[in-house]
Image 1 (cartoon, rainbow, N blue to C red):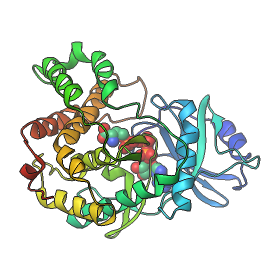
Image 2 (image 1 turned 180 degrees about the horizontal axis):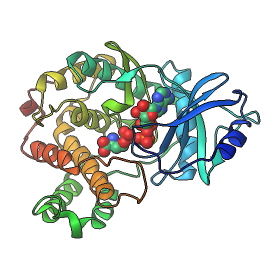
Image 3 (image 1 turned 30 degrees about the horizontal axis):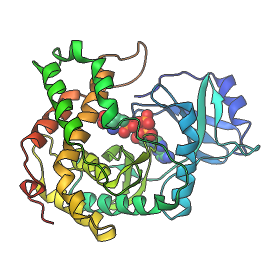
Length: 321
Ligand SMILES: Nc1ncnc2c1ncn2[C@@H]1O[C@H](COP(=O)(O)OP(=O)(O)O)[C@@H](O)[C@H]1O
Ligand SMILES: N[C@@H](CCOP(=O)(O)O)C(=O)O
């Protein structure tokens, strides 16, 4: 459960009174997510998500995320949009945190994605990339390759408590990725965290995307690599080529890959695995006292990273151009 900040009834009522959404009927902490505090807010006008932005979110980035949701929704991407206050503000302050009220999106996330979900995800991701092409705001990826070494530095001393030799392994991986990271790939606005828990389905139909708080400008194929890692490994952490092919086919029917994007996939997947390994490791070693959160296991991404290290080219995944 991710609720880092408690909100009193009085603070909540005063905050909600700034919006034209009626009075509060109920407000419950949401038992999912790790980054921000989220509440299911029920008012006289319906259901909403109340988000208090925490640790990793820079206040100055919030307009980018909130405007992006509006932009994508206006371009036909199914995603929630921020609710503006009577004064027209999408962002307010609650319990000492930046806070927003976001529309509620119907659907459920899929615990064990099947081939059909991976195909739908690939299509939706490509539509997302195309829809972002005329978004005029820009946010460099704060969690891209150049940030990984400083991020790792804070965890290296304790890394071996997670897996023997992990500290040295991380340094060697950073050396490799920094030396070989691809440049000049087609780029634009990416989601950068499109894990199964951020994609809602009603039955097998994808009903929408949520959680745009890592969105940034970076290579489109890196976003695909993040999804290959998050969607195409089985619970025993074997890579499922059928799901990977479905995801890539779904994606490339909407936005074809260049040969350079295709060839870069193993390296991008390695980088994407390291990025989530590092943030998970950082969070695992520093669970805030009293926070209602279940940190995600860094070892899952260590295993995924090791898998990609063993892959020579995209065809080794069983994928064709
Ligand atoms: N717009 C929304 N509509 C419906 N449920 C939502 C919405 N936004 C968030 N949620 C719920 O809150 C959970 C956590 O949201 P998320 O944005 O992933 O949090 P975090 O940024 O903390 O990781 C989601 O898994 C979902 O259950
Ligand atoms: N997807 C990341 C953690 C970020 O959590 P989310 O709830 O915002 O998706 C991970 O799995 O490490």
